Length: 182
Length: 167
Image (cartoon, rainbow over all chains, first blue to last red; front, side, top):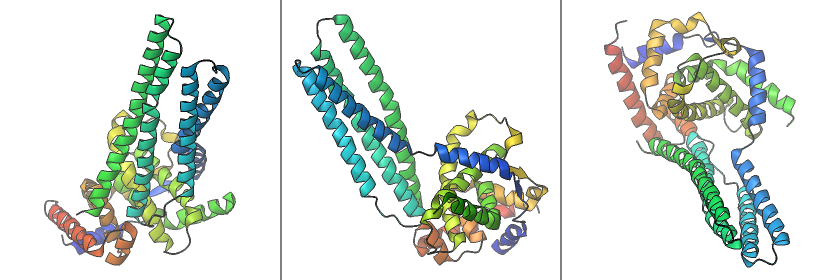
């Protein structure tokens, strides 16, 4: 067959009747997807800001006499503030992307890169927090071991999240490479 | 823009261009469940895009861009997840197949299109729909010469494959 014959096969199909749309189910599903559509970046940013600023303030109020707790509270306040500034920058500085498939892909890559950086920051901040908490109360070995175990698990689990974003970014970059290079 | 206005535009677009969406859905999703998921995902993305549509290009061009982008990313994701899916609730499918999906030549063509890389698949669909190189370059965001190279590749692939098919 020539390509023109192939095109004729394509043109023969009836657009209207390939599928019928179950409209009530579609409407119901779209409404539910729309409601679920709160962006994951928004949620994790807000959670980090509230958790860090909230805990930092609380620890500062409660642990004034302990140097390590004071440093910890400052650390958490600084992390929370950094997350807040990063969020404001992200929202204000919305870059313009072409209205093309490549532009959409670049936009997705931009969001994915931000998620990778953000999850990495939150992951590595676990280590100083763990050390400062342990140093703030060194009188019980059980307490130290339990805390270190808890933070080790948290660090490990946050690696899953970080790797998920990294994989997604990698896939998008691969796709972009395929689109831009031929 | 009110939600009602947005929904009216969506219904209008879906009504007018559902054929286009069906073709993309069929080219990127291969089980009824996946087709349903993809069709809904495309619809949601179109719904979200409505406030940013300024009429700088034709609605059809706009819909192609959104639908193909959604389909390409869906296809990448589904490769990993499809094994874990269980097909359960047929009653709630959004897309119900009609007899027109069973034409042999057309099924062969969709089968061959499905073997192309996701990006070439979208070029192939645009080519079959009769878009010009310039329009394709505008939708995809790459140069016309790049489009030309890909089109030659797609055409050669399909004509070569058709030689092995007994019509």
